[in-house]
Image (cartoon, rainbow, N blue to C red; front, side, top):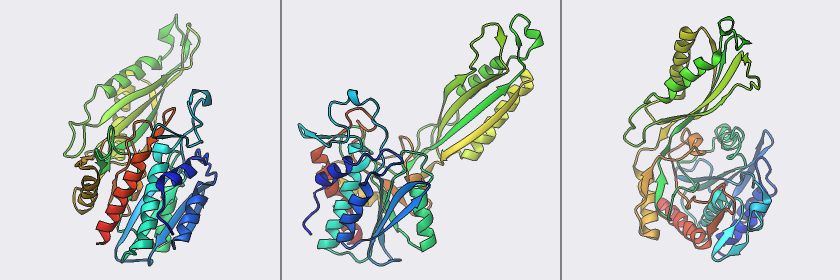
Length: 381
């Protein structure tokens, strides 16, 4: 096989309208290329989601390097707002336009191209494993989680893993992720007693109680940050009573809170604190509060060491920049991979991800493949 052009591969993937949970042929494109290069490929399908596991080398190899990424994308929004076809992969003035060009079909194309070239030209002593999901932008219950569940059942293992998400805010090589904050959503329903607003003593208004609770939560300092994490944050993201009448005290009011938390907390510890605060307000106002907590992911850290050093050296060699080791940003599938093996993240500049006219600089796709190729060579050396 000739060297794989990551730009052409990115374009082929972008032309697949793989808005979660649709695949639209994206994994078929990758599977055909990988099988031609000698990878053993398995489709893992769960919950209507398509995922791809690919391994070159022996199962259970003492050393195996893994890449993780996704081919699903978020919706495009309003088509008329786009300057170029969101699934056209048009290249204009050195940029490729399209949904998923940044997040993260170019990252997948770059690591697939690097892996294929390596096993064709310099077969390593060990295994190269690719886990590619179609459910990162959705609920993420049947994507990387399904892949890892299948790997556990089949005794497939990665020694280390690199997730190819966009990681740099402004320029290539700026940042790599060695961990991520946890994310938690809390849903509150405060119940009182409905009544006429002219006779408030005959009712129990849940809204003052909710206001007091939200004020207490948002005014509380969760922590001051830790060695590798910024301070945790809490945001009140919604309060809704659904009461169109001005002469009715409502029975219920609802609110939603999002917490992004560092490694000084867990989802369970925060859930306990939220319940305690709600109970304090109920005792003060006589209301009843129902709380539902959904933890999207726990905070985690891959301590700086061999894996982050390996990636940092490759980035420095190819960009002449020392990447910052960061835990900022939202969640990624690294939150699942960290339970399997050490994991870090490195990828493109993420300025336009999820935006109208999402685009990637074509030169950066080539550069990312070069970085991934160096990481692989150095790991197996």
